[in-house]
Amino acid sequence: MCSAMSNRDIQAACKYHEETKHSFWSVRNNPHFLDWANKPLPFKIYPGIETFPLPRDVSQTGVAALSAIADRVPSLRTDLVPDLQDLTRILYFSVGITKQRTYPGGEIYFRAAACTGALYEIELYVVAGGLPDLDAGVYHFNPADVSLGLLRRGDFRGNLAEATAMESVVAHAPVIILCTGTYWRNSWKYRARTYRHFGWDNGTLLANMLAVSAASGLPAGIVLGFVDAEVNRLLDLDTRCEVSLSLVPIGQRSESSPAPREFSALSLETIPLSKREVDYPAMLQMHEASSLKSKEEVAQWCDRQQALVSSAPTHQSVPLRPLPVEEQPKDTIEQVILRRGSTRTFDRTASITLAQLSTILDSATRGLPADFFESPGEQLNDLYLVVHSVQGLKPGAYFFQREQNTLELLKEAQFRAEAYHLGLEQELPADACVDIFFLADLESLLERYGNRGYRAVQLEAGIIGGRMYLAAYGQRLGASGLTFFDDDVVNFFSPHAKHKNAIFLLAIGRPLIRKPRQVA
Image (cartoon, rainbow, N blue to C red):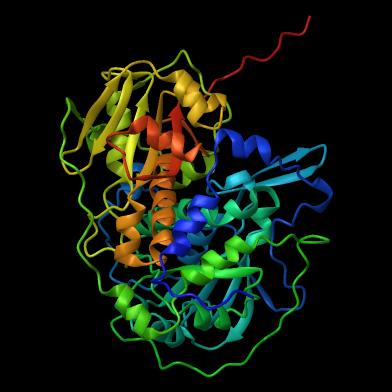
C-alpha cells in the first residue's frame, strides 16, 4: 500500500510526470513487449448480481453534432429528470460498442469514444434516485450487453453530496454517473504512463457524455472535488485495481438529495481480467498523492484561486473564421459518434480549410462545466499547432490565442519532419493537415490546485481532444490522438512554451482512402 501523501505535496505530481516522460532514448532503452496471452478482458463482469437490460431502441435526439459539442442547444424540456431512454442514450453514446472487428488473435470491440490502445479502462457506474422505469440504487453499466447491474438498492445520492462537500449540482442531480479507472487494463500496454491515460480516456468519453446530455436537453457537469475513499467505498472498489476519477451529475431537481445512508462492504465477485497482473507503483502513488482525504480538503479544492492567464500575442496573428451555424454540417451527434474512429492513415496530399480548423477550435474550447473553474471560460491547457496543409494559413508553428480567437504565428516553415519526430516518430503527425499540441504550466497549476490539478489538466485535455475528434468527424475529417517526446515538444515551441509541459497531442487531417486492389 502507498504511504499517506498530501494533495499539497506537489512534488509527487512533478516526480510522476518527470518519470513518465518519453524521450528518444527512454523509448529505445526500455522496450516493452506485449504479452498477448495475458491481455486483460475488455469488460468488468460481476457474475452473481441482478441485471436489468436497457432498451435497445432508444430514440436519437437529431441534434447537429457541432451544436451539441459547443453546447448551443436550447433546452425545450420542462422536466430536467432523465428517464430510462435518456440515461441509456447517454451511457451508450459514451462507452457503448459501436463496431466489432475480428483479428487472428481474437475480436476487438470498439467503443463510442476514443481510448488509448483501444483498451477501454474507464468503467461507468450510476447512482440514481427514483427515475421513471428505474428504481433508486447504485448500478454498474455493462456495455457488452447494454445492461445495468444492481450493486446497492436505495437512494445513495446523499452520500455523494456529502462526499463532495454539498456541491450544488450533485446535491440537486436526479442521477450521477461515476467514472472509474482500472489500472491493469491500460498498464498491460502502457505501464506507469497509464495514469496520464486515465485523464485522456476519461476525458474523451466525457466529451461524448456532455454533448449527448446537451442534445437531450439535460444539464451535466464535471466534479473532481470529492473524498476519494467515500466514493470508492460506495462502489465497493478494490483500490489496488480500480479507483474513482470523476462524477457527472445529470439533470436537475429543485429538492436536495436525501440524507446519507449507512452501508456495508459488498465484496462482490468479479471475473479476473488476466491470469496475472503487473504492478506499477508509480500510478498508485500518483493517485494517492492526488486524493482528497476529508470534506475540509474538498472545500479547499473548491476554493478557487486566481485563474491562469495566457500570454499576450507578440507575433503576427491570423483571425479564426468558424463556419456560421447555418452553414455547418447537420450530421447529428449520434451519427457522428457512430461514424467516429481513430484515423490510422492521413492523406498527405490533401488539405483542410481555415474555416474547418476554426470550427474545430471554436467548438472544442467554449469552456467546461467543471468544478475546478471559477467560470466556464477558463482553460488549463494552452494549444499549440503545427500547420502543414490548411488553406489560408502559412505552414508553421502557431499558438492559439483563445481570448482573441486568433492563431499567433511563432515560426514559419514546413515542419513535417519535425512533427514526425515529436509524435514518437510516427507517420500520422507528419501526414496530417494540422497537429494540435496541448501544453500546460504545471508548476503554476499545481500551486493552484495541488496534485489534484494533475488529474484536472489531463482530464481537460482529454475532453477538449474528444470534442475535437467529434468536430473533425462532424465535418467528414479524421483525427487521431498520439503520444510524444515530452521535452522535445516543449523545446520545439520555445521560447514561447518555456516552463510548460507537454500534455496531449491530436492530429487532424483527411483520411487516406485506399482504392481496392484490382483482381486480374
